[in-house]
Image (cartoon, rainbow, N blue to C red; front, side):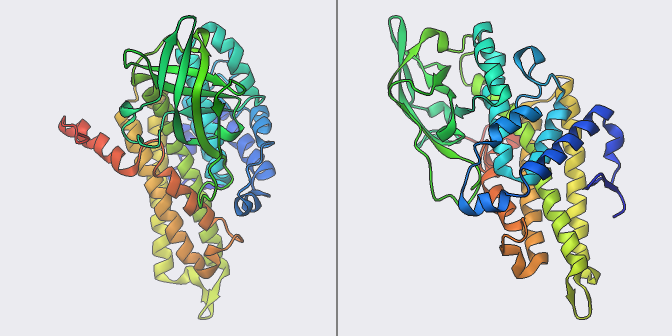
Length: 392
């Protein structure tokens, strides 16, 4: 195909904007996904199986915390590199990308950004290598889009704290060794807490019967008078600014990752349209099929440019929460629309595990909701351009 770059559409020659290191990272991750994820992902999804062995493999290939400094086990890479890694993993599967982006953006990032030097040295190397898996506890059963309403609480008890409450819809939780949890202290201020597997009163029940992210493990976090040592409190942050800062990093990764899912759907649809014969010619010869494919490529190209520019702003320390929000919303919406159009091109075969379309479509129904719903991100942009908060 014309304008194809090493196995992915590059209609506006965006590769010219990337460095040799970026291209090498992309090829490394693409080879990893083809070797370690693609051969088994349809079976994992059908069986709702989380392949726990992938955690160590992600660590070995450098997928965890790529922007974290090398002294703590991270990759010391820039944000465009991080985006490229997320895009390649999500070409394989959104659930696999969730595993990696939660580890890097929602666990390692807050420990690095808000933690003490002792906490960094204790946790980050284990998380970077895949020896430990982490999770992020913000969403509660009654508080999703309004995290400030959380009821999980942290009570001072002399030389320690007691943690009580529950978190819901937590990626990685059933397999985690450590959870970054956000709770209100005695003064009603939000603090970050590091909760380790094995602490008495801490449990992580798994959520079953998901139709989406079936190869990812999802659960709850339940705290029943969990004794938290004072050294497990993140010392360098207080308030909602802490968890929202983590979400900025994760949403940025999603804005790239969703492009990967869209590309996989587009490429599958293009191949199928050239192979499937109806009325004595490939269905790709029909105007309506070409319209779908042309629109898919246009939207992917726009999303690629948006992600690249956002990555540049991230590298320069200029990206705003609102810009990240717009990119997450636009690119996930784009990917979900492409998945649906690709399913139509595949006809009835599009609902089977012979093709990746339905799996991507179901996954993206979660991605468009988590880490800020489609509508909430719209209101973030609305508030930014009008100066008026529509949340309350």
